[in-house]
Amino acid sequence: MAFFIFIFSCKNEVNGKLNGNLSGSGKILAQKYCGSCHQYPSPDELPTGIWHQFILPHMGHRLGIYSNGEAPDSIFKEGLSRAEAVSKDIYPAQARISKEDWQKLENFYLDNSIDSVRAKTNYTTKVVINNLVHFNPKTARHLRRPPLTTMLQIIPEKRSLLLADGKKNVNALISFNENMDLNYQLYLKKSPIFLHFAGDRQLLLTIGEHIYPTDYQRGELELIYREGVTEKPNRSTLLIDSLRRPVHFSILDFNQDGQDDFSICEFGNRLGSLTLYENQGNSYMSSVLIDRPGAIKTEIRDVNGDGWSDILVLMAQGDEGIFLLYNQMGSFNQQETLLSFSALAGSTYFESVDWDGDEDLDLLYTCGDNADLSIIVKEYHGIYLFKNLGSNQFVQHHFFPMPGAYKAVARDFDQDGDLDISAISFFPDYRSNEPLHYVYLEQESPDRFSAQSFAGASSGRWMVMDAGDLDEDGDIDIALGSYVGFYPDGDKTGLYKHWLEEGPAAIILENQIKN
Image 1 (cartoon, rainbow, N blue to C red):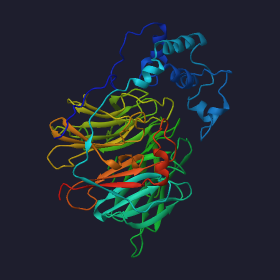
Image 2 (spheres, one colour):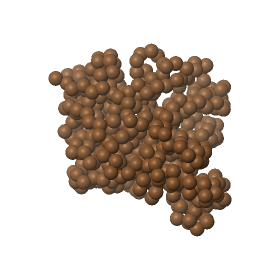
Image 3 (cartoon, one colour):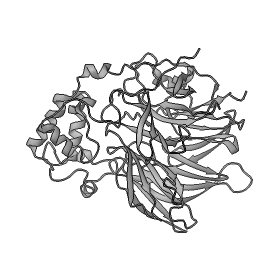
Image 4 (cartoon, one colour):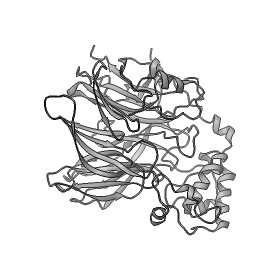
C-alpha cells in the first residue's frame, strides 16, 4: 500500500509577502535600500549570527559602507577589478546611505532576526519515502576519481549517455552505451557545462577551467563534430569565446533571417548577463538583454502566439525570478516578471510544463542553492509548481520540501497520462538521519503523490540530472551525475569519504514500466 503525501505551502512562501508586524524607521530604510535591487528580505528569514557575520557586511559594501572608508582590496578578486566594480556600480566609491541610517538598518535586522536555536530546529517537515518502483538503478562502470560530473545528457538516437568530467586541465566528455559500458572519451581544456546534440553535431558550452564562482570571461561555445568513419568526435570549431562563466544556452532565430542565433546565460558572479548572440555568417554580434549576474536557464517559446520567439529566463544572484522577454519583431524591449523570489531563495532550475492539460504555461521551479553567505537548512527550499490562471498570472499550486533542491523535471514516467516529478538535491539536510538526496514523486491520482527514493540514492552527491529514453524501449529513463569537488557543510555522515573513494560518477535509473 502506497503512502500518499499532499503537497502543501511552506511557512514562508518563496514568492509570498512578508509576515509579522515589523515596523519603524529601520524597516523603512531596509525597504528603500535593500528593496531597490531585489525583493526586500524579512529579518526573520535568517538567524542573527548570519545577518551579523555575512549578509549585512555584504549589503554594506553594496551601499558603499566600508570599515576603513574605502572598499578593501580583498573583495576584488576572481576576475573583478576595482575599476570594473566602480564602473558597474557594484561597490560604489561614495556611500549611498549615512552611517546613522545604516546603523538603524543594521539594528532592524539584528533585533528582529531569529535566534540560532530556532534556526536549527525550524525545519520540521516530515514526509514518508517509499521504495522506488518501476526503476532499476545501474552504475556507470568507468570512473576518473574523484567524480566531478558537471553535465549529463541522454542521447536516445545513439542509445548513449554523455557525461562531462570537470577536472582542471584534464576535462573530458565521456560516452557510455545503454549498458553503462565505455564508448569513448574526448579530452578538453575547459569544463563542459551544457550540450545541444543534433545528429553528428554537438554544440558544447564550457564554463571555464572550473565551475566555481568567478567573473573571468573564459567560457566558450564550440561546435564538435566527427570526420571520417570514426564514431568519436575528432574536430571542433570555436563559435563564441570570452563568455563570463556561462551555464546554459538556447538556440533561436530571433530575427527570422534563417540562421541560428544563441541566447547565453552568462551566470558570472558579481558580473554577468543574459546575452543574445546574433549569427552574422562568420561571426556573432552580442547584445545584452539583462545586465546582471545570475542567469541560469532559458526556454524559447512563442508565448503570445505572434510568430516570434520569446525568451523565458530564470535569474538568481539577488534579483531572483522568472522573467519573460517578448520578441517584438527582432527586438527584446519588453520584459515581464512572471514570478519574483526572495534574494535568499537560492534559485536553481525551472521548466515550463502544462501540468493540468489546459494548454497554457505552468512553471516547475526549484530553489536550494546553499553555498554562499547563509549556509543553513532553509524550510522554503524545495520543489514548487506554479499554475497559470491566465494572462501569465501565476499562483503557487504545490510545494514539496527538499533541502538543497537543485533540479526537478516533470515527465509521464509511469505512462498513466499525468505528469510525475524526478528531483535531486545537492545540499540535503545532513542533520537528518536520512538526508533526502533524490526523490521521485509519482502522481497516483490528481495532485496526490507517492514520494519514492532508492537504496543507492546517497551513493553520490547529485548535481546534474537528465531524463530520456536511453534504451529506446518506449519509456523515460533518468540519469543522475555526482559532483564531489568540495566538502558539504554540516555533513557528519561520512558520505564525503565514501563519494571520493567509492561513489559513482553517474547512475542510470532504468525505467521498467515497459517490462
